[in-house]
Image (cartoon, rainbow over all chains, first blue to last red; front, side, top):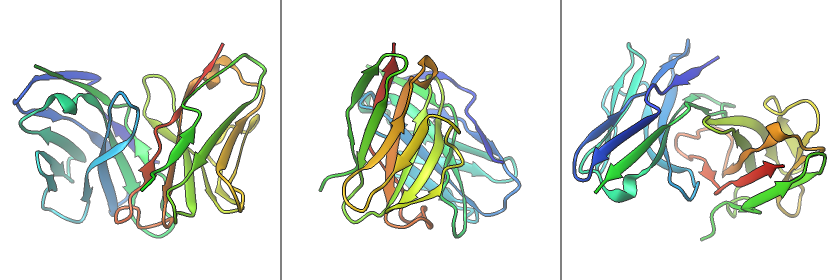
Length: 116
Length: 117
């Protein structure tokens, strides 16, 4: 079974600053995918960024980037130039790669507040 | 371009009543997944359905919970004789296919918040 741990229940950051959210996971699988989802107060789950485990290059999507350390089983999210609209819960999620794999395993989330 | 539609957005039930949660997937998506989010928790997988078929219900409580995805109409998650512990946000997601979710990620609805009084 896979587990995903987000050790920071809450974080805050000043607008325009940079913040890093932590995520670690445990698995015996070698091929898998990792995701960060954002859940604003509207409750909608929005995919922020994704990473394939066999790719060494860290994924980047505009102001969002990840630091993927496969050996350490770590997958942190960096948000640069934080904006008020980034205020949300952020969930790290894991998916085994391969046919027939469809269950996402989520962490408990980190509540991020961006302060004006 | 409608996404996954869930209704109602909020549902209040007294203990012992039935709760019915509806989910209309993205047009063209034939795979539906239900997840539950308990307070202070991440989402947990409940059930995976295709049209008229339950593929995997390993995350569903053994009693009182059922799900269906009929040939016509939305997917329904049904909870009979609700108890306070059923209070949670229930999310539906859909995809075009069941695998390669990396390339075809899940589309989530806004969830239904069930409160049992």
